[in-house]
Figure 1 (spheres, each protein chain N blue to C red):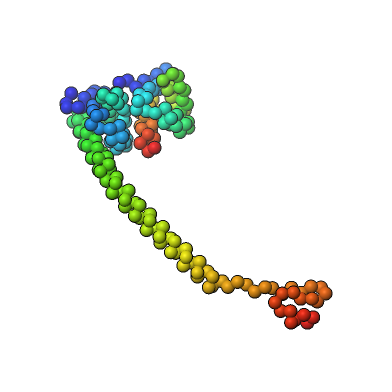
Figure 2: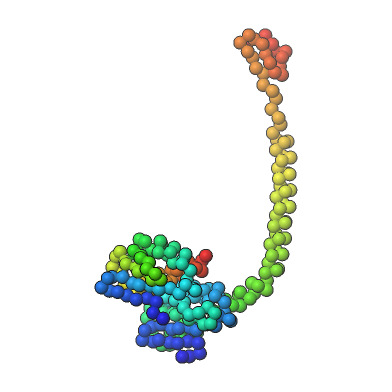
Length: 150
Length: 75
């Protein structure tokens, strides 16, 4: 055992012991996900006490590489734990910025709607009533003066 | 932790998942999406995968495990 790593060189995998009180399950999942391309990953243990992550390289490697993989995993845990902590810290600011952006957009879309409605009225005047001529020659509509003309 | 067992005689790989980390709905979804590759049977807490074509049974088991983890992370 080297720190939190247990290397199984013959079998070709490394176990990483993770303290779930330090690294949340989300962080463990995120770190594990980064290794899916190069390793087969299995998670076991007890999420309240000790989480064991097995990393088995897809291409068989030696002792040194297993150690490197385990240490790289530890680095990813720290990376994502830091990211998660920053997200929590910045949550308030992020929400404020989003609200401001949404309010600005609502204001702009309201202005655009008013402007477009005015334009449409100017460009498309109401059509005049049509003149209807019946079989009897009577006309209805605007141009009654044309009654009887054919 | 022996979560993947190969039965060469029956041409199947037997998987067990720690439910504290692997939610059943993602396992079921993975079974559904692996339908073209293998037949799956659930018995108690075990999943039996029988490949439709000749594949390395170990690899099938590991790939299935990875797939479930991918589903969990992407959800």
